[in-house]
Image (cartoon, rainbow, N blue to C red; front, top):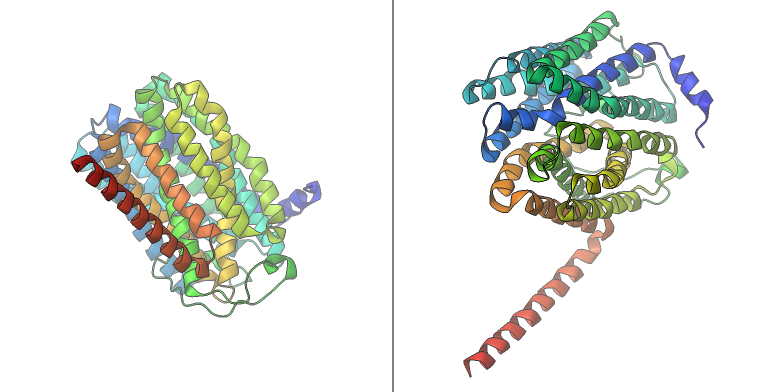
Length: 444
C-alpha cells in the first residue's frame, strides 16, 4: 500500500509545489484542446480525414523538432526554463490564432510554428522538474516523476468535461481562449521559479529525452539494485533494445491514432455528443490515477517485460471491443482497459528502456520519448487514410493488429524469432499447397 507520508515528503521538497501547479495547468490546457482538435478540423475548418491527418502529423513533427532543439540546447547550457517558457508562450499564441483562423494553409502554419512547438512543453516540464528538484534518492525521484504524471492525468479527469461545457456555451472560440489562458498561467508559474544551478538533477535522465539521434549502442547491463533488475538478462543487446523500442512505437502509434479518431467516432460514427467525448476521456483519466500511483511506487519490484506484454494484450482487446461497439454506452466501461495501457506504458515503459541501458540513461529516455513521438507523427496521416479507406471500425481493428505485434515483440525472446519465422513459413507453404490442391480439384 502507498504511504501517505511519502506524499507529504514530496510537498517538503523545495520547488515541488509550484512544479505541481505548473503541471496541473499544462494538463488543463492539453485536456481542453486535444480531445476536440480533430472535431475542430472537421466541423469548423472543413478538413477531410486525410487533410486532418496531415494537419495532426505536421503538428507532431514540429513538436519533435522543437523538442530535439530544446534537449540539445539544455544539455549544452544546463538551462531548461527559457525554452520551456518559449514553448508555453508559443502554445498560447497558437490557440489564440485558432480562435479566428479557418483557412487550411494558414492553419498548417499555425500548427507547425506555434502549436507543434508548444507541444514540446510536456517533455520539457519533466526535464525541468528533474533538474529543479533537489532529490538524491533514485526511488524518490521516480516517485516524484510518477506523481507529476499523475497530476497531469488528474487534469484529464475534469478537463474534457469542462471543455465540453465551454464548447457548448461559447463554441471553439471560448474553448481555445480558455486553453491559451491556461498555457499562460503555466508560463507565469514557471517564470516565477528559479533556474536550477548545477545540483544533482542537472543532465540526468530526462535532459536528453527529446534527442532523436540517440544511439542504441548498448553497454553491459549492471545491477544497481536487486529488485530493480532481478528478472532482466545480464547483458542487453541492441536487438533487445530495438524490439522494446519498436513495441513501444507501435503502442504509441495506436494510442495516438485513437486520440484522433475516437472523438470523431463517438460524434459522427455513433451519433454521440461532445459531452460523451468528455465523459469517455475523463473516466479513463480518473482510472489512470490510482494505477499510476501504485505502479510508480512499486515499479522497481515489478517484472516490466511481463507487464508491458500484458499491456499490449489488453490494448488489442480494447481495440477489438471498440470496433464491435454498437453504441456510445458500450464504450464507457472499456475505458478501464485503455487506462491500464496508459498507466503501464507511462510508468514502466521508460524505466524498462533505462534498465536495458543503465550506463546511458539520457539516451535511453530519448529512445522512449521518441518512440512515442514517431508514433504520433505516423498516426496523423495513417489514421486519416484508414478512416477514408476502411471507416472508423476498420481503423480500430488495424490498431488492434499493431497492439498484437507489440505483444509478440515484448513476449517472445530474441532467440525464438528464427524458429518462429520458420514455423510461419512452413504454415504459409502448407496453406498455399492446400489452396493449390483445391484449385486443381475445381479445374477437374
